[in-house]
Image (cartoon, rainbow, N blue to C red; front, top):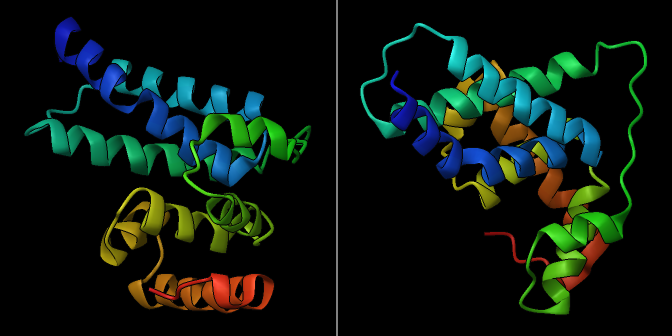
Length: 160
């Protein structure tokens, strides 16, 4: 990978990777660390990529794996202020923020599935590969998350 290709990948993916990590870890500093580790792994890899889409998918999978690895660390703290997270996203309406707040209350696996599916527009099979689970598991997590969101938000939650 050339310097220009790497710089292009970083510019294209930094914000997206950070938001994936923040969604999963719910801590600004940990999300920054995971994003940085993911980008460093890209720099060090000898893998040959076919195109930008291949790089982007590889970065997403790597980021998810690094988030999972982070929970294995003995000193992990799991918290982020909702106001801090609110500043990172732009919300068109108060309903959008209410949905974001409700998603933040979900268990980590369901929260990650929702984030990747709705915010990153990933397909279920791609989420399964990124999280090293079966497609049926991703579907179950999304189903449980939708039920939980519906109970929290009532009619404000649109299921599809």
